[in-house]
Image (tube, rainbow, N blue to C red; front, side, top):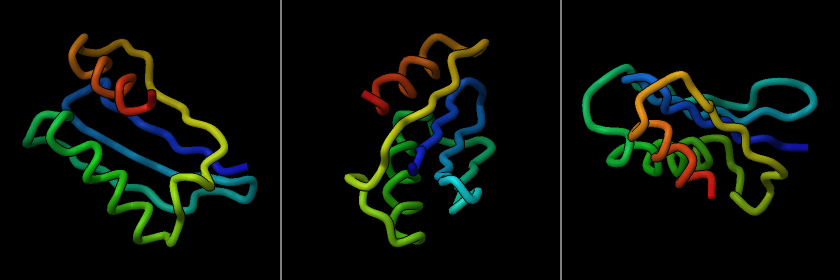
Length: 80
């Protein structure tokens, strides 16, 4: 099982991919552009770096807070 994790609950954005054996890759940015401008770029770049297609992902985990309403909404929208 391959799981994609998204965290947009703080000023930092992070994307990670794990499987049964552990972490396959992660992307973390601490500040700068809003989540809405960087999250999908981060996801696409991470998947390319680890050689994975989004269709291979079995599940998505997202942070649910606490955090800013807008930040959480961006993470939830990206997961959907």
